[in-house]
Amino acid sequence: MNGRMGMGLVAVAGAVWAIATAAGAATSLAGTWTLAAADDLHADGSRTRGYGQAPKGRLIIDSTGRYSLQIFKSERARFAAGDKRKGTAAEFEGAVLGSSTHYGAVAVDEAAHVLVFRIEGASYPNWEGTEQRRSYQLKGDELSYQVPPAPDGTIPISVWRRER
Image (cartoon, rainbow, N blue to C red; front, top):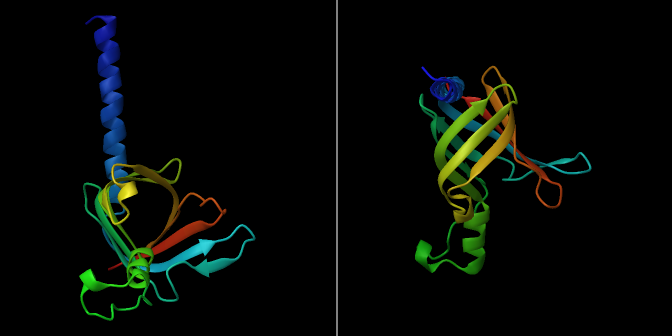
């Protein structure tokens, strides 16, 4: 075996190990999670409810790291016309800003405490095809993660509880 081939095999083995490690870590998160909180942490240290007082949501992760995530503001108003094609501008705004949904693949960097969401589809189209990193903590059956700060310094925080 020549030096180049040996180096190539080492690189491939390293990549396979990294993928297997990320998949194994994602497996530790496999299951169904219910949203417990969707808060905003402000620059002054105060916290507010980003999706209302009783947000609703599910995060489902399978054993291969495929995921589906939905967050909804519980206080969203129903459309008066009873037809989503006939909503008012305010009703459409409430529906869009009162929800966050996306799906794709999630990997876990346990050493850095980072979740990596590879978003394939999302209610916010600008997220599609992106990779988003979230610092996380896992304590028993509680998973929490922080979104990078918004331009105003606000940090969204999601807290999930594993269903048993």
